[in-house]
Image 1 (cartoon, rainbow, N blue to C red):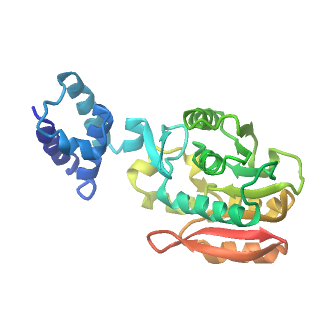
Image 2: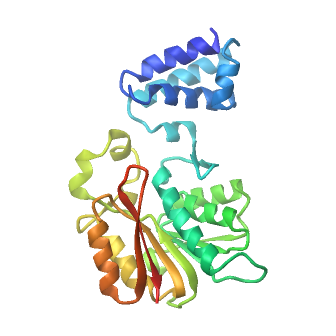
Image 3: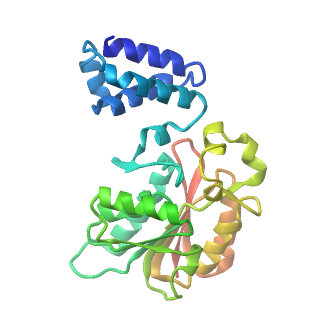
Length: 289
């Protein structure tokens, strides 16, 4: 059977449950199995699909129709133009988190521009797969990044991604809960985090592939999703250098509450909320006075 025929059949199977994304998902699956780009699928559409890959293709389709996340099935995802290893040890990196990285890099470039010598380090709290920490290290070759998480399995995945992206020498991994991983000291140029921020009340509103497969400890937070955001805002000022940035990914409906927390703390200025591509206020940032 030709690659073009396999693409059509795979799309038709996936459309039973994912009609809006079936074609794109089919392209990703074939791209991964054949180890070619999605564009090459069409350039090589007349070639025969390898017989030894058929059973693996069928396994992926069946698992996906059971709502297993496609990124977990393929073992990777794309983030900020790079490929990251991805499995059930951590949340799947998402496009909105790229805005958090962009906000952090913009501040660092303006306040701590690239130069020879040592900069204050950057801290990624709750690193998960390491996508934020590793991307910052890739984008700024002069930075040292601390990446912490309470989950040992997630930290191991993050280490693997640092090695994959060849920045393992500049990303330091440590186990720790939120701001408890290091002693208080105003020395970080930036602190960023994509913490758990989904309210338990919203559990049933999540897509099945998120709710049933991604690690719940990385998704849900008490106090209407604000528990960990509140703690980070409260304690980050003890760790930031003056002029350092605190950048947080937040829920689509949490902007007012987070703005209030930042303003009420008294140690932050230049409070800013940035929209994602869907128009939701998704990243909150503030500068340590």
